[in-house]
Image (tube, rainbow, N blue to C red; front, side):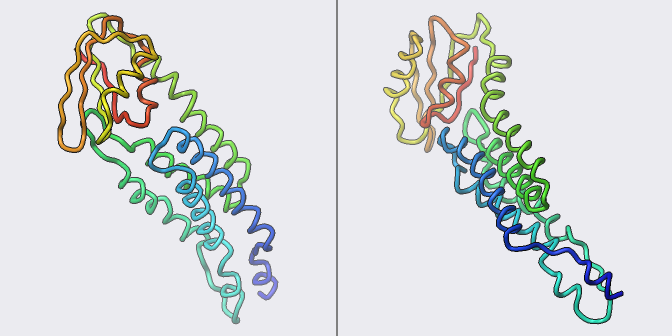
Length: 230
């Protein structure tokens, strides 16, 4: 019996440091990509989510070793009980980022990256370092190269589509949008502007629609949403 109690796994301080540092680095890598694109949840948010998930996992699996080995009775405990609550708990943090704004629903990708950051933190805290690193690389690929590819595959411009609806942030100038269109060699035939509450909707008719406009304009910090329509 004493032998079994003595076999309860624990972590040394340097192992704690390694797992938390890895979680911070991987979460920060995802957040850095979001920071470059000026999204709501950036470097610090994703790092904190990842580190917090890793810490919860470590505490859940190793934080009660003294309690488990004390006394003469064998105490049964589930080492994943606290960590399991991260999966549902992070959903509330992600839900607050999802907002319906005019043309688009914003925040879905931000919510998803927080959820993935939490999963990566759990993997790092549990010691699955290779899985955490691989998941981070795949996440960054999905956020950057695959995003550009998806625009090219799904945002095809049909010949009858010449009107581009662009939703701007509050206080954004239409001149900024026109300047961005000039840089893309897009010629505007007509323009309509309507203010709807705290947002501004600009409808432009272009003489030569281009498939590059949607991804290029979407990357601008003052643009909320972009959509082709008849």
